[in-house]
Image (cartoon, rainbow, N blue to C red; front, side, top):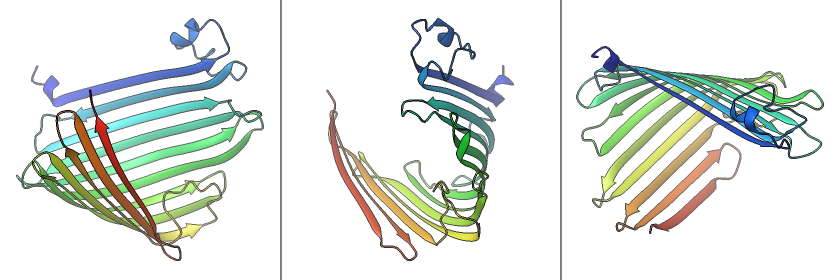
Length: 253
């Protein structure tokens, strides 16, 4: 039994289907010959996710592998029949350097594509590869400060374009006023190499320097009322600064 505590696995599957067929039993039984058939499907989605963690019990080292695939067919906007696919693989290692310091390393491989099955045309097919390192300082459970850096390469095979970028960021969070949570984050991204044009506007990395910041305050005013305030901004070299603020109150009965 002790060996089982060194390993944790989670599997998740979800099927959505809006169809013209009256008999939906084959869909519920995951009969793929019936699911997402262009002749019958109005909108359908299959989500599969598998996550495996080694040493999950909070020791000095933990390793996590996560795979996710989302396959979508959308025939709601005639005459377009869209096939969308998102597939993501993430490998993450968490190494506790001391009682207050943690090093988190992560590698991500992701594929996003969209095509028109009626005409056989691909709008985009973006492959992303990212490596990120993050150092976390957490003196007490309710306070957290982290610094991170990463390298990313994105390539759109449908439009023969690619971009590489370097990112740096800081984030902090802390409990305030006993029942509140204050958080803040800043990110800076610089492009290193640009080839072609991102015609589909799907690249996360832009062709110019990008600086973003986010902040928020969440408050529990009572057992039935929560409130939150958030603010974010972005600067792209050569473009006006954008700002977004939001305030929200929720009553639970």
